[in-house]
Length: 322
Ligand SMILES: Nc1ncnc2c1ncn2[C@@H]1O[C@H](COP(=O)(O)OP(=O)(O)O)[C@@H](O)[C@H]1O
Ligand SMILES: [Mg+2]
Figure: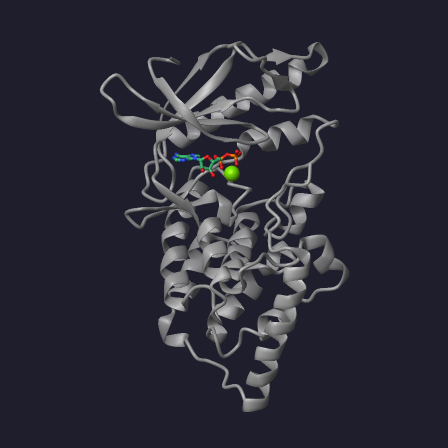
């Protein structure tokens, strides 16, 4: 029992904490996230209190405070596309965040399933547009509350069994942990993290989340993430990779990705609203007509790259660089 909730089972354990399925006294189910950063704290079998190394105590407390703040901010947001935080409390020298229990799977699971079917496209354009329209409505509210998500990626977008798209895993706690602690190296998901996240400078803003949205749309089309920002700064192959999708997806959608994923933060949509406006311009949808030769080459390229991918194994890199 924690805070009056009965823990049923562990749903997931990541670098920053554990997510449990729990139920209240009336049997209603919740997901409860516990702050337990594996680099700072551990818990022995049968113990409730985390053990924190003395030299890591101040950092542990800083992260704890920030996790608590994150819960407090999230609790003020009530939107169908943002996970609902219903309660948060301190116990066992750590913090617990009680959320609505979502049933379904992550967008990442859907991408892998769709990709493995090996069709010419992972998702239809109309599916992508309506999915991101929903996500952006939520993200706009988040930004209005002066929060950034900073880890938007398919694994942090949940698709519920009743067909809602919900953002989970808000990263304020991680942000503080990696900024203040020089022995905790920066954390970001390659492919989805904007270049300014690698620099950890003051140029982060709504456009930083917008870069990740562009990368998510890309992943929904290609089945795998784009090259990471440092690779792109070295040699940018994004346009080339996207040119292979012309004729399959509209020019407008491809341009939206290029706009969101501009390396220069100022060259991106500066607000979610600006992006929403562009994404809803259905009338602007036109397709580049491909010649027969181009189509054949496209088919050939995808066979070659499929073989290469098979050789490399087919996991989408999900690991954060830590
Ligand atoms: N509200 C929720 N309802 C159901 N499952 C959840 C919920 N929140 C998180 N999970 C599950 O736990 C996993 C990890 O949660 P997340 O918040 O992304 O933490 P992290 O990635 O930092 O470990 C998710 O991929 C999902 O499977
Ligand atoms: Mg996550």
